[in-house]
Image (cartoon, rainbow, N blue to C red):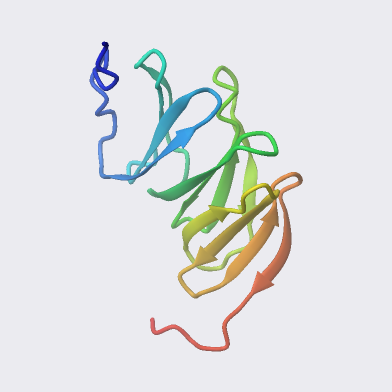
Length: 150
């Protein structure tokens, strides 16, 4: 039986800390996000690097989420006030679909709702924005009455 985790090449392709790692359904792969502003896609079938996106954000990438429904989108966030929507299935052309802009403070997390076309982002001031990934529109902005210590 072949060892599933034996790779054909070194997989250490980030020059700074890796901040997150998630599985992508199509293509069958995983991707890592780094503080070096890179997204690296690794094929789980061929055990090789598929693609490296340099400077995916203006600052280091905090985290990402994968939405298997509604096009199979990857959403990343960084401290640069934006979340970005990617199409990892497009491995040859530009896979950036667009940006989710609307935060005035660094975004610290992103999540997707299962079986729904909605993305949730939260920033360091507890502002939550719900987006529709089909058209990249902001649906609602939720704010807290309490101030966060700076």
